[in-house]
Amino acid sequence: QMQLVESGGGLVQAGGSLRLSCAASGRPFSSYAMGWFRQAPGKERVFIAGISRNAARIYYADSVKGRFTISRDNAKNTAYLQMNSLKPEDTDVYYCAAKFVPLGATVIPTSGYDYWGQGTQVTVSS
Image (cartoon, rainbow, N blue to C red; front, side, top):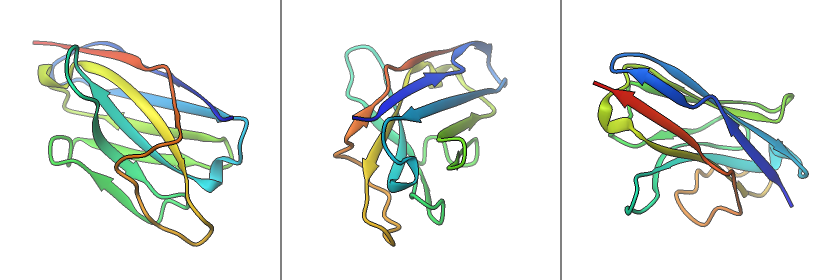
């Protein structure tokens, strides 16, 4: 089992920034692609950013492209989501997720993740 623990959420004014962290343990972190999702109450969880196991490839949903930056530090077993220029519509619960991918693969899965964090609330006030 892999454990994922998010941190860094909170309340911020529109235009502000937050940095989410996702600390992993229990499995070799570098063997997993990492993704960030968000979910509003009563809505489906939406994939917003992903990074391949060696950070060679990165993907952003159009809704966050140019404002959010995903990264990872395999030495620290941690993934990050830097969120800038936040908007009220970015208010959601944010989840990190991990999916095993074979050595040499640079895929960024958009679904079918193996492990999930507990989520962290991000609230952007207008």
